[in-house]
Image (cartoon, rainbow, N blue to C red; front, top):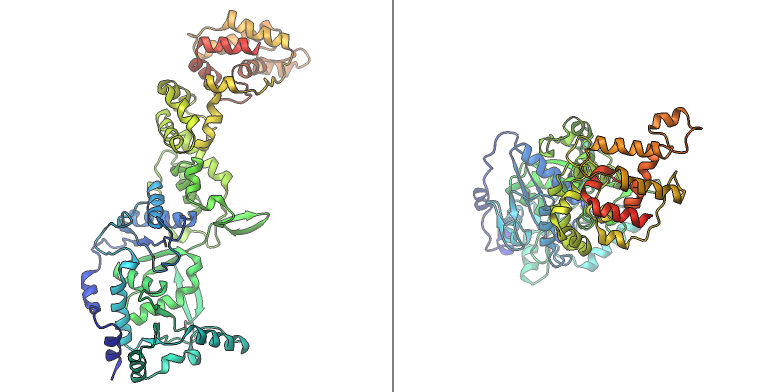
Amino acid sequence: MDYKDLADLIFPNVKPISYYEEKYPERKLKEGAIVTRIAPSPTGFVHIGGLYQGLVAKKLAKQTEGVFFLRIEDTDQKREVENGVQNILDSLKEFDIEPDEGMETEITEKGDYGPYKQSERKEIYQSYAKYMIEQGKAYPCFCTQEELEEIRNKQETAKVRTGYYGVWARCRNYTVEEMIEKIKAGEKYIIRFKSPGREDRKIKHKDVIKGNVEFPENDQDVVIIKADGLPTYHFAHVVDDHLMRTTHVIRGDEWLSSIPLHLQLFQEAGFKAPKYAHIAPIMKNDNGNKRKLSKRKDPEARVSYYAEQGIPKEAVKEYLLNIANSTFENWRRANQDKSIDEFELKLNKMSVSGALFDMTKLLDVSKIVISKMTAEEVYENAVNWAKKYDEELLGILEQDKEYSLNVLGIERGNKKPRKDISKWSDLKENISYMYNDLFEKDNTPYEYQVIKDKTKINKILNLYIEKYYDKNDDKQTWFDKIKDLSEEMGYAKEVKQFKAEPEKYEAHVGDVSTVLRIALTKRVNTPDMYEIMQVLGTDEIIKRFKKAM
């Protein structure tokens, strides 16, 4: 009896691997085109690190006219959560990182290299496992959990490496006849890879991001097919990325230590290995210490957090590219109006140690992204967000769309647009004073700054209404009138005049403007007051000034 008889006994009905090699031929793409993927497990919410990898992978495929596909790695079915696949699809769609191939819904897919769900590829893995057994490169292992525990205990007592290797690999030295006998006797088994490696030898590998790395060779006889007939991650990865013709495996650097095993599996199976690019994790500063963003501790680790907060997807992607390549910031400075699609991402420019996630920086990026939107775009985005998260904001925005567009159009579309909105969850607070219903409810006191005398404040407001306000004034005329009002009150007409002779004046034109601004909005800082007045209109301005008096 030989290995072929053993393989036939274990996998009697699977197709030969030649069937799959023919079914999934080399892709006809131009030279240099990258074929890569995102391969998440449906075991919980999507982590920002996963989205980051997906963004990098899609960008590389797109800029080389390659292919970006989504594969669902669901072989660990005990950990799978309900709607896990849909959560992944929704998150990718939310950020326009949709794949060219792969799963489209929980049950449908597109592309010629599927199935794209590992649980539906069982027969494929078994064909390749059978091939490995026929070659004498894999074997059935009959060790029980208790026996494996016993091996581990002995290794720990002897203070040697734990694992199933060398003299500790009990089942690898059975004869084919003994293995067949055990199977026929009904003994339970799994399939292990028969490693040709030795730990005292080193392998050298060039990672696209990390550069040259060196590891001991793999000598572990890892499990490749579990008791349920499904593969382990290691074996599935090798078979899938070979058949799907992946050119670059882009993944988190927690997998870097698996390189010796994965390269060995590719070699022993007779496949050409893809290039590996291990992305450093996104880190967080925690009281001066750097640590990975944690699913348990950090809300920003969840991709859904950004939608809940109303941070535009464009801002999140822009910020992630900032983390990805140090060259992005200079590119953006030189190309302020270009789409991020025009930026050329380079894997060898990615951080080796892991970039710090800075929420303040992300919100600054978001302010710039929102500042470039038209009033219509801000309105649509804010309404879509408010439909899910803020009924009151939705109500005020939709009550009078034309008025809301005017409010959102203040200081927008000019050379220096307003940059006071960083996320849609801030919007209501930023614009509430422009809506009578919300302004009426606002019990904030009027906090006047330099000019605090009530009589003088009332005089400024009265004079403005009765003598200086004209809704038809252009901006220059409007401001000139505030200067005249300042002069009439005995204040400096110009700030420079005040600075030249501070002992002569109690206040200046800027302080008078502040009185008008606070009476109108109860705020010290607002966008352009002339534009605010144009939108509020005469009746509302008079009403608010009288209320302030």
